Image (cartoon, rainbow, N blue to C red; front, side):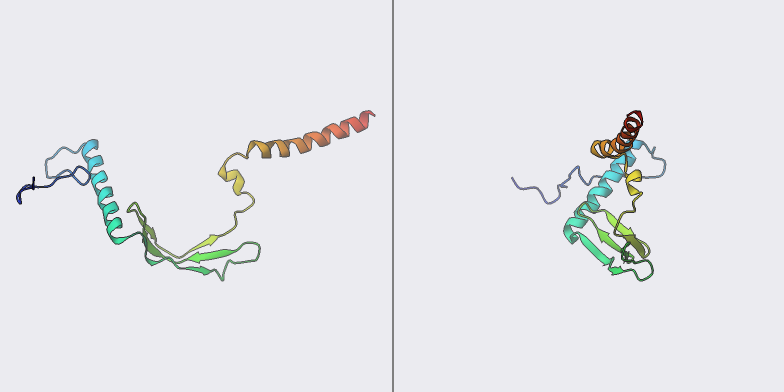
Length: 135
């Protein structure tokens, strides 16, 4: 059966609350508004396509680049993700392509294998030196 011309076709994905002066704002209505906005951005991204809108060129950095620490500069720009998220880089940003040696500490604890290999070396050295002194 065909839908009448004057029958609204509603969906729950893009339905947003109607705000007006005097309305009580609750967490549920704000969440519903945010969800509707996110779905609208996602649909817009599907229609336009994801990718770089403008900018975000990558150039070799002349100021910071060395053989040991390669650095590129990402130019300011805007992109749209597949989920409809707007990605904004407001200023040119230098990016190191190699992690510093101390980065593993910031990334979390080392793996169990790394723990065994690093803890075994000093312990083995102390055992061998103590056995050499006792012999």
